[in-house]
Image 1 (cartoon, helix red, strand yellow):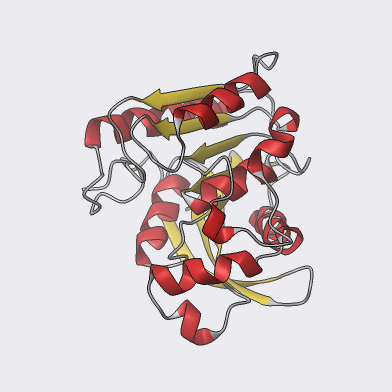
Image 2 (image 1 turned 180 degrees about the vertical axis):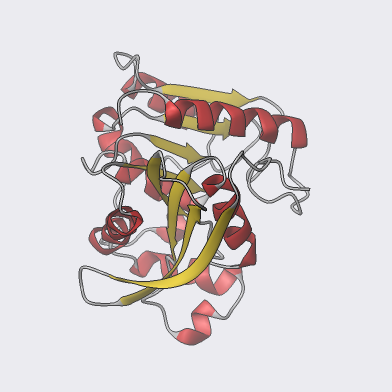
Length: 244
C-alpha cells in the first residue's frame, strides 16, 4: 500500500509531451484534481527509472490533494535502448546530462500545469535535481526527497553541477533524508545545514534509521511506512504554506 493516502479530491492522470528548451519532445505525466481548480502546481522529478506506472499513481495521489502535477521523463534525450534498460544503463548515461536541459524540463513541467506558481519535488536522483531547481528562481517551494548532495563520482559530467554549490540560494525548501543513506553521508548533511544556517524558511528532516528511497515506492525493501507517512505529511504541509 502506498504511503501517500489519497486526498479529498478525485484526480486523473494522463501522458503528455513537453517541449524541451532544445526542442526535444519530453514524455511526461500530467495529473490534476477533477472538477476543482488546483491550489498550486508541482513539477515532480522521478527517480532514475523515470516515468512509469508507479509515478502515474503517485502523481494522481498528489493531485488528489489539490495540486496540478507534471512529471517529465529525465532520460528523454537518451537512446531508446538506454531508456528501455534497467537502472545500470540509465545511471551510465547520467554523466551526459546537461543541467540547463534537465532543469529546463522541470521549468517546462511547471509551465504545463497552468497555475500561477509551482513548487518542485523530486526523489533520489530527482531529489538532487529538485534541489538544484530550487535555486533557479522558477519555483515557489521545494521538497527534495533523499537527493544526493554531491554528484556521485560515477555520475560526474561536464554539464552536471554540484547540488551544494547554490544550496544557500534556494527557495523555501524542505529536505527529507535517511540517516542510514550512503548517498547522503553525515558530512554532506552537515554541509547542507551550514548552507541553511541563516535560512529559517529551509528545513532538513532526517529519519535516523531510514535508508535510501524509503518514501516513494512501497515495493522497495527500504520502504518504511511510518516514516514515509510522516514525511508525506510534512511535505504536503510545507508545500501548502506561504503565499501562492
